[in-house]
Length: 454
Image (cartoon, rainbow, N blue to C red; front, side, top):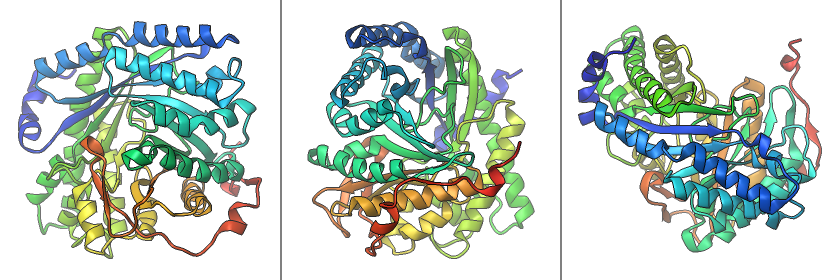
């Protein structure tokens, strides 16, 4: 049982250390809505989302007021739209129409994002998958709160390099389609390897086909809480350091468990998972990079950074698993550049490069996240970066992702302002040597030998 005493214990974390419940995400299955008539399909999608989620925001606000716990976002994830729209959609414009329907429904219920404009193509693409992917630039330029994700690889299937190559082009087209907003569309597009079915965080959330009709997943975040706890054990050995992180993660997860149980009960929706992710914000004191600094590296990117991040990620997960039987999603440490002031400082100081970030993704929760690059970066180069990150996920049996933003009209040394939780970012340099011959080969990189477990 979780009592009010545990909430009171976290009061200081909430008031002084930026502890919050980052999101309550309501997952909604659309699988049973499949229809060959696009008009009927859009109508049914809108009605299903509205009927299921109409009380989500109100309920989240009530819980936040009653327990004094900030709940920053309320979000929706739906079944990958490539699966739902295949029978009705014959052109990319047809899929874009579904995106506009999702946007309209999400705004009607008041959530800040809806995820699931997605396709799962780790081994191959159906015609519906291809049409949805081709529609992404239009869909993300014509909507405000729709998020898109494409899973192009897995440890079990290998990497679909045809999809990787295509996504390099789609990222660039999305940047062009939203160039009037500093290529903001790319901030709502993520490419995955080993994408989880129950991730509550955007832009990668979708409602997996193995999930129930509807589910509540909660994402908790507390970089500031961990940093403050570590300040009290400055100079102590690794055993003390690890125990401190683990105990702090336990307390943070219990807050998420309370919110998840309350939301589940009040909405009449089963509880899915708690995602304990140290997800930073642009707010001062809410930074994963600052935790790494407190552990002992001058800047994120300095020698020792990858080891410090590995330690942090592992202890966060150990503490979370003890606090809840249903820890899932991504759970660990996020290292987005634009959303973390400490990471931005490290880039501006010359301590952090794209290559070092890639190395860090071997031991953290996601991957190359919210990184602004020059707008003239070739689509083949973007595809090569995606392929590298997918390989890390495939070989290491973990989720990795890429959310790159080629900012059209801007170059290295300039900055781009996204606003809100997305923050701002310095444009980072990209290796200029060509990988064209590699990414243009076509086909699939086979699954690794350790994928054969049967």
